[in-house]
Image 1 (tube, rainbow, N blue to C red):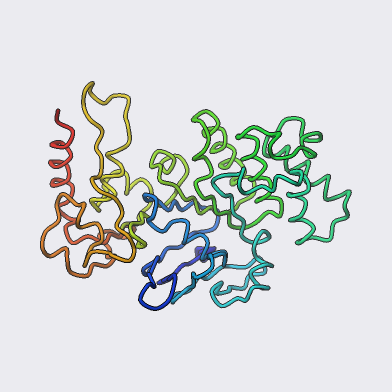
Image 2: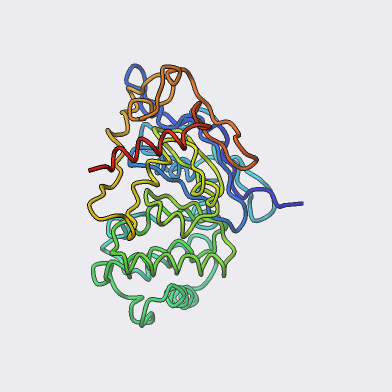
Length: 343
């Protein structure tokens, strides 16, 4: 019998504000992450990826609240807890020790007034009974694990004294110092050049294999998804529109939005002069979503029936999509994209 998911999000709805200005930022979001696996949340800015991660950790900004749904987490002791029902004290015990997060911009996440050793060691101060000397030793070991050179001296460095790549490695060390079961990585390589990005992704894969942790990887980069993920959930305007293991999704994407994201990836063998496919328009504001499928105004194959409510449905045993034209989208989108790239 397979182990239950380490994290199961069911029907999650998150809102901001109150009264006539209230908006629903997440609409019935559901997904699960199995032990030792990586789920990628993919979508443009404004699709709800980061709000999902903040809801899991109980870190929604002022005015944000979970309206309904469950976030069930498998604890180290074998029990299961609904994170939406835990108070502030319960979440503080989980954050860092059970579930940790890497933010996308380390320079704004690390405190410039404290050394990286002090900031990483604070996690051990909160979640362990190690002495000060043992905490420092453990921090140096963690810096070595994330491949920061001369870790014994870098431990006393301030964030501004490190390069962008080393700051991101320090953020990874901070997240993993308590050996969490689940790591949330919110676009951890966005601000890095491609060489450093590749090194960070290799590092995360190695640490995941060594520590056996699960990863929720948030990104807009489908190339990174292909490298990192076991399963993919594509988000648009606060909802999951397609979900599948990475190979079926890349081989046979069923939602026009997913096809648009994949078609926008540059390829070295693209014919000279051929334009990259671009998805027209932008993600609609949450306070003014179109009726039915939220992608409808930007979709090249939308029909009148797309204005009706649409929900995720199974099109294969491990493949779900929220599109009434999923069965015919391949041919229709192929023709639309060929026309868009024609010069």
